[in-house]
Image 1 (cartoon, rainbow, N blue to C red):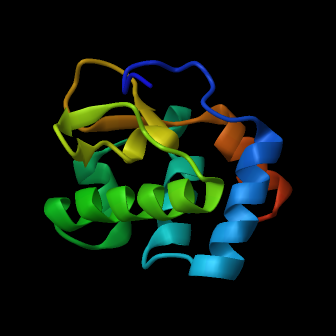
Image 2: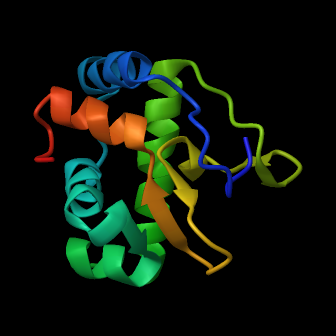
Length: 126
């Protein structure tokens, strides 16, 4: 999975199942719903690290770590293993929920299939 690749990584149904398993088996990580809601309400469902931090009321580094933790927890619930890595043994978890919408560093667009799943579960407004 390439972090710049907008092609689907999971179906709406797979995301729905994963979200429910995450909630029931792992719990939703801190800021999890806030992250999803920030994406859902953002123009083009796109956020930068700074706009996410502003939405969460935290520092950039914490926002970056939070999206990684949320993605990792959802990946575990979905039995998903990322193929993209920062380096050996250092996987990129965030491309499960978003893709980088441009070469702009730390700019992410929520995956449409995940947005649909979140809406179907009524976790976000569409």
